[in-house]
Image 1 (cartoon, rainbow, N blue to C red):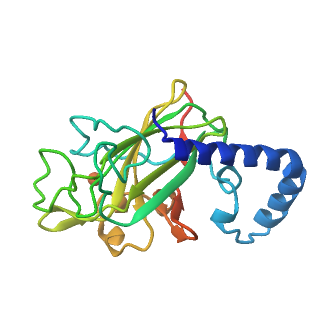
Image 2 (image 1 turned 30 degrees about the vertical axis):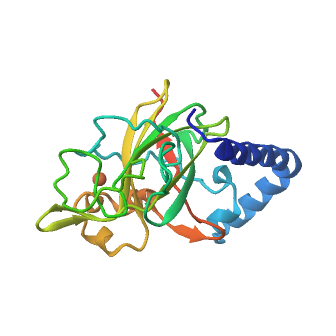
Length: 239
Ligand SMILES: [Fe+2]
């Protein structure tokens, strides 16, 4: 089971709400968005449903998987990385929620896309034998997780904000999360998600290889309402 009961309820509730809004407000919403987006009015991302707030269907820039893709998957393989089912304690660090949609380059949502994420724990350490970082591992953190998009292309992860870590003596990687997305009719995408406002972003050799527009697609702003949430949309190429 990829999604715990509580998360499934949340997603189902989100879907029901989305369908109701689609039926009731679709025309008003289109008019509103047409008017306000055309005029350049800023609309807070968290106010809108994911599919409403994303008008850019350019492909998400690719990055390599890096050296720390897990050799073994954890026994717990869902979309909540903040605890392991067989452990009583929760992972250390700041809990964050990542929401978004997976879509194609024609702005069509992709359902049943499989999303994997893997990342360092709060200390900046990966659960991988090649990671030479002396920082402590977190025995309660899941390190890798998986989600499947719903009919609207939406997905969700609950995890912790990863720490930065040394890639070499002169290069510290900013906090980031690795993503791979697979869908049967689309090219596989591997990329990384970054956190807005991190000073290390400006010095990161991988992130700075991107154009400004590409960087904007991979750097996510997190807002705190009830929870610290950010939206990361992923655009895949149709095959
Ligand atoms: Fe990494």
